[in-house]
Image (cartoon, rainbow, N blue to C red; front, side, top):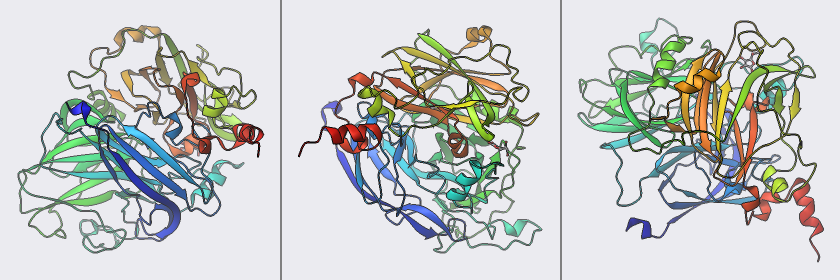
Length: 558
Ligand SMILES: O=C1O[C@H]([C@@H](O)CO)C(O)=C1O
């Protein structure tokens, strides 16, 4: 019955522009949408069509928006990846994103051109179950927590630093933001510390005033959490309250309770909390940096039990995050994420298995990240058009390597750090089953290996397993084929590997990359394509640049 209900189109008209804003109480320039930061929340029901007419009001640069976690079945040109699925939208131009949201869940959207996500171009995208359908859990109310990290240096300076000799790293963020709000020059927890930092207001109407969660006692709330951080892995905790994880990246998981959880850039979760603590108190909601030596204060807001005043401070200090390098703690959380019973199961064997060695290395003296020794450099003509129209020379025709040397020592810096840039594509037969083994390694500095959250466009994948050290064929027998979680983002732990499986069933060209913004900018990604010959009706606006733009001009006869 419900499938007969006609899809509802939800229309939005958005202007993207730079504006002054004080996300952490210090004024900066941010990328806003319709004068808002973060951008407006899109709320829809499964099966709806989203139509966003996006006008670029930036004075001198292009823009695109990626709908993170939305698979874009049949609309690969709407994936919002510059140089991959479309031409960047020029200043003054409008591009219409039109796509279906087919699966309920917690999603978000963000810029996917240069480092525009780091400039604040992001917002939430929430998909409710279709009419007549039910979520597999109950709750009385809900909140969204869109998490991000914030730098005072502009993305332009950050970009120049990353592509300079000597290399200038962006460093750690100045603040962590919850729904675009953080505190740099004051602390909401100053009261508890011996430091001289000033107590900032919990109530008020400043752009940096914390977004307090107002709850009633003895209810259950759903928190929809998404991380669009540029760099930071985060730990989220709520003083005195357990969180029951029920959803990850738009897929239901077997519920499990935790005191704190790790959230990597590109991931989203839903957790349930029950407000069964002492009702005369308020409680902390805190986010802290993990996986890198933290130099950033916690991001804080309050869980306010009504009718208490929202400015009543909790009786104890904010939760203390696990040690930044306690990776066993992170792994124990990640390993608990399993599919809810009844979720789609993976095919039992792959058509093809590819191996991706992640290394930091050098190209002509520049510091880069490479996959199997190739650092991704995007072409001038977006792949979707150049592959569809068979345009030779638009990108490297050489197929990039699908494995790496068996003798490579992942525990040490590369013996030969010189690698090359490339723009080649991994092409998959339509409906083939692809296994990807992501292998982490040591960076250029001895005894360092970092976390990388890998995000796949156009698909969800099953996470079949994780392991420490170098992957071996023996590890295949340990793959979880029973209840692996479906995700669109999966982390590789330092010196470890992660095994993924997906079905190449979505005609288009899809990015697969580290979701850390500077790392992608330094080449840490690959391009996948399948069934591009089946793609029809690519809008002209998506093609009007590079070689496809020239093709259009040559066909034009006044
Ligand atoms: O890509 C990176 O560069 C720095 C460091 O390795 C060099 O400054 C860092 O921590 C990264 O993640």
